[in-house]
Length: 119
Image 1 (cartoon, helix red, strand yellow):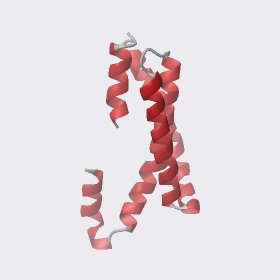
Image 2 (tube, rainbow, N blue to C red; image 1 turned 180 degrees about the vertical axis):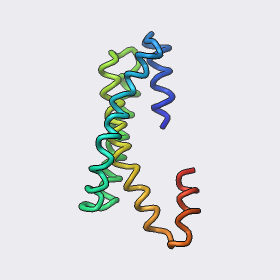
Image 3 (spheres, rainbow, N blue to C red; image 1 turned 90 degrees about the vertical axis):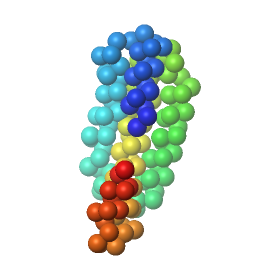
Image 4 (cartoon, rainbow, N blue to C red; image 1 turned 180 degrees about the horizontal axis):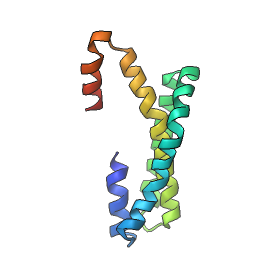
């Protein structure tokens, strides 16, 4: 979630873009989450939560490494590619992590457990 705070600040302050342009840089990540989330649920049923979480976290690490290495002073398109990777990674991680959390809890503890998990 820090990408949603730090990337816009970075591209406005360091790269000299406007707030609107910073918002457009975040757009690919949000679109990726919206498009991929329904499919990830089906993939989770087919391959299991653990595989998708590992895939998502690996992609998240690579995407944040990419952003931390190249975003400062880079073209908006290059920064958008990093944000897209973070969005794809989030789609692959969020739903399976929620499923895994619910599966680990007794039925009468799911509400409280998910409240704590979602923080």
